[in-house]
Image (cartoon, rainbow, N blue to C red; front, top):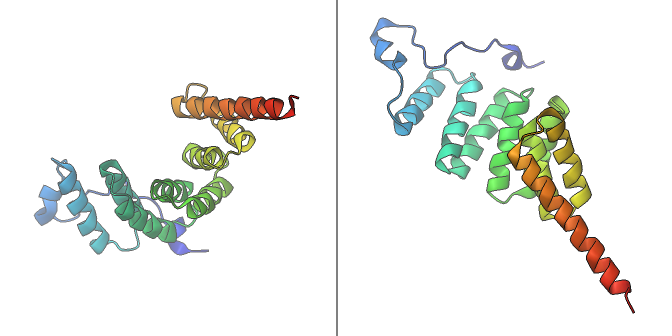
Length: 177
């Protein structure tokens, strides 16, 4: 088993050990500062998979999907048993239009945590885009069982039902004399 995967998670990844680094423990003033601190922390603790995971989240929030992908890929290699790392990678892949890679990462996340909502949403979107309404509905049902108010899952379920209705209408029209 990978020793890194079983290492305990730090309480605060921004916490500093030395008095000279006390300024590092203060809250970040902006996203650029957060990015810089995470990059520095990653250099100081290259085996801490939580740091690239956090950096990936920062990059995703900025819409930097390539940078997020790179950070999440690093996180998955350091945290191979983390569903969150794999589902985050799946989302970045999806945003980059890499459906095959997104599906693989989402399936890995679901193998680790069958209820991971991010991975299920990625799969639902992939299925919708491929016109696989039944598979999309199944993914949405799994999400909605845990959170019946999940707006994104409800919206995708609606899309899947609309796809199904359109298919049925097209089949009916094609059979009409």
